Amino acid sequence: MRITDEFTRPGGRRGNFALYAIVFLLFGVILSIFIFFPQFLNMQSGIYGISCREIRVKIRAAVEEYNVSNTKSIIEPGKRIDLDTLKEKGFLSDIRLCPQKGEYRFDAMGNIFCTFHISEENKHTAEKN
Image (cartoon, rainbow, N blue to C red; front, side, top):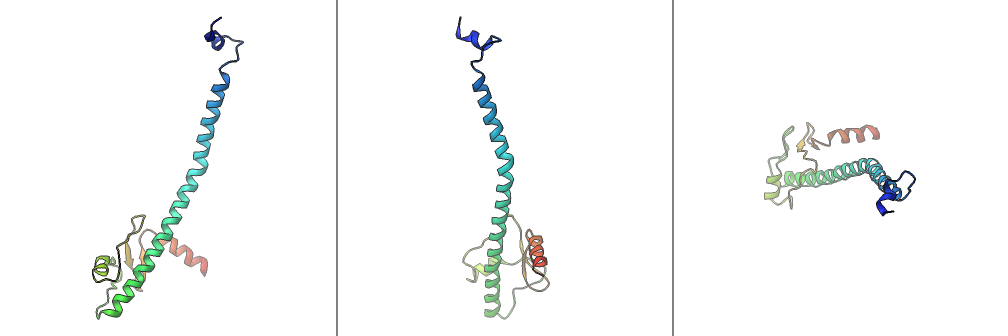
């Protein structure tokens, strides 16, 4: 009897364990992907939101400093914030953009918002009230 006969014989049990182990591991990997990948994406989105908020705080401080130092205000409601001007004049040390490709703009009240994260801000404001 050759060793290959044990794999093809109807009564032979050798070789099945490896097959079951591979199927079990494959199932475990697929299950892990379905469980942990969405959580990773949610965590990543949360980190991007926090980073964007911190960048807006720095831009807000730079805009306030610019307005105190200059006679003409940089605030133009509805328009994009001119980060290049703030950096050239020394009010920003570096230009940082939204990690999720949003743009920083002024609203009608002169507040700074991100075009990507504006819905998150409205949700937090509604929760506070």
